[in-house]
Image 1: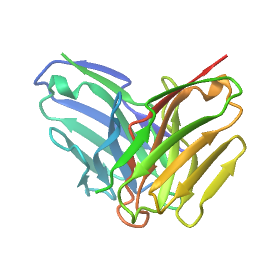
Image 2: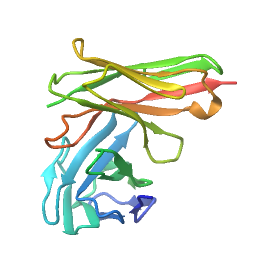
Image 3: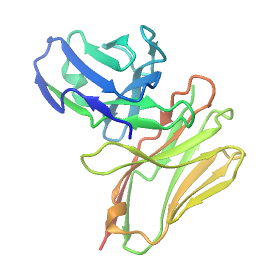
Image 4: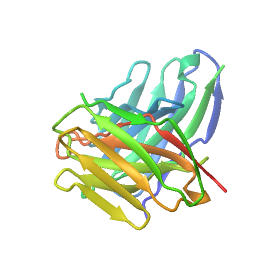
Length: 112
Length: 113
């Protein structure tokens, strides 16, 4: 069973703070993704990574960066949090053979 | 890039009735179309998918149809049950290329007892 673990379920931060969201997977998948989920907007891709130290911008990368120093860990970084980054953040890994995405439980971030 | 539109945004049906959710996509090269279900407070999970070499796929009470000419695909749930209440997302991608999915905006399905 694939396990995708996100470090924090709920966070409350202040505007301007640096925020780290961490994601760890135990299935040796190369592909990892960060999505943002907002009501009425579906799941929007922020960044993805195909391998260690590799990253690609998704559809909404502005205000975010990522780090993938180890295959099992993919971190999302908000350098200076803003109120419009209040959202649910979902990490996912992808099975190479089927293309199925396996999601973490999500991190709900509130920026005050 | 790919653009996926999903309708309706909310859908209420009586238990036992059928539910249909429709999606359209823009990139004619897309060839993989999964559907994810997200129950309240839980993570999205794949429930069914279809590839462009078939027009229909069925798994018990759920089925997906694909019309490549019109660039739309639909999720059909028959004999709905309260546990079918969830948000459903369609998605489209070109497999074998970048492998990232473009999701629709989601449909909140409520099955009324």
